[in-house]
Image 1 (tube, rainbow, N blue to C red):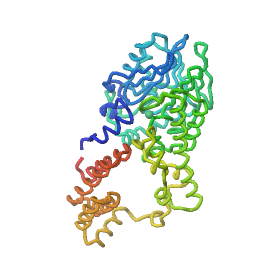
Image 2 (cartoon, protein in one colour):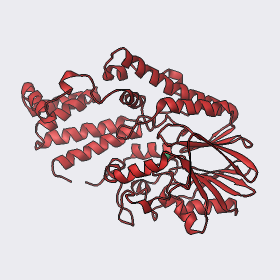
Image 3 (tube, protein in one colour):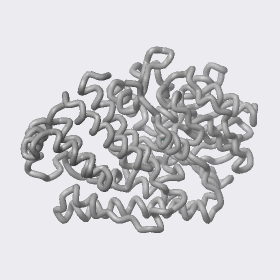
Image 4 (spheres, rainbow, N blue to C red):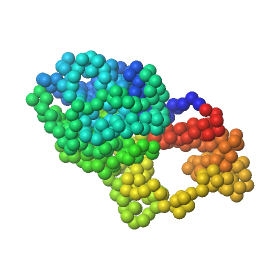
Length: 429
Ligand SMILES: [Zn+2]
């Protein structure tokens, strides 16, 4: 089956990532696959630039002793990023800070090294462990992220030489002096446990990595490792306490204007804290995870905040991520502790309903009014008899309708990945 990238997925990706090219999105580690776009280079403060070479942003600070670069993009962004940097400064690359070890932020530096630059590479102490995990889970991560092999035959880095490793690690806080100017590198967990952000006090600029993105934080991604919503809120509050006038975000547009930046950071922190407190209150009161998620309410003002749209993640995914952090894998339903197989359950439901065809008919009726429920019924029909062509078609229709109805990129992607699974399960790959 050919993976598709339908229109609503492309528009969500463009809204979240700016210069998004689906081809690059499928080959994030391919050094020959750039975004194909002319990088955006925005002068955000004296000798300070926001650079967007593709789906990710980079911060550039020029000093008398050389350049401080915060992040370096996807592997394929390297050459365009180098050219963009050289279009505004010819100073040597003094220091690079990785805001975290993710595929889209810490892999474009090779182009600078090949051009002869020898920067200090600063990262949080947990970052090498993050790279180690990438190697251990290369197959899993390539699948979860829909990656295809690049020019070197690899869909995901799996050997030490596939990474540009940091040369200097820090724990909580690191003060750098470059060109006589102070830069503060701070650790704060968020999307990852190895996150760092950079504060330039004399310029009143923060380069935040993915701790700030101009949309609801990626704090609940359904198929990915633990995120840290509470510490994310703490980091946003600490940034707000510094009164920055610009934030170079990890994705999307930069945040500018002292009041607007303060509002964005405090709203982001409040949004996450509401979810964390709701999840913890539910867990402490013995409420089942499903009920905790179903009763989550986000105040109107936050749900409609222009810099916090849920276009990548969803509040309910974040809520489940918090629940997982503080509890075990069991969702509390006794039948789920040592369950019958999904196929056996579905076959029994089909028997009670009077056959797979009855389930298919009901799923199609429900899909006009209640896609969530229709999805369960279509899934029972498919699992009850994977060889039933109409059941397979119905399941795919419902999954596509769900993806089409979702503003969240992660929901869209995962419904469509499931449609691929329907093909795979029936040997139609
Ligand atoms: Zn990112």
